[in-house]
Image 1 (cartoon, rainbow, N blue to C red):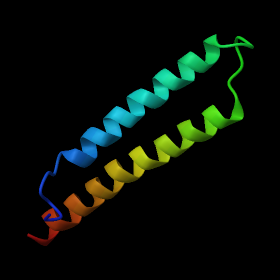
Image 2: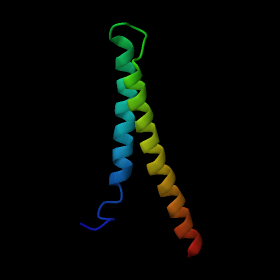
Image 3: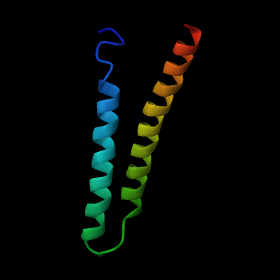
Image 4: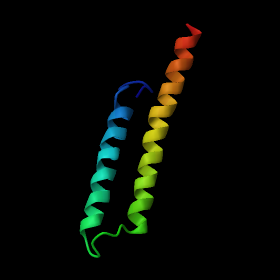
Length: 70
């Protein structure tokens, strides 16, 4: 399978994971004890944000470098 077989797949996974992380944080507010988010939920949300930031940031950086070379 070539590396660039589906260029939108990484953006799609980042958007889906970010949506899942936001939903997870709101659901964590509703379960007992209400109003508290467990540390594990915050850790997963932080990992999701790091993944999404790296996908969008690295992709933007590489696209800019390729565009500048042309």
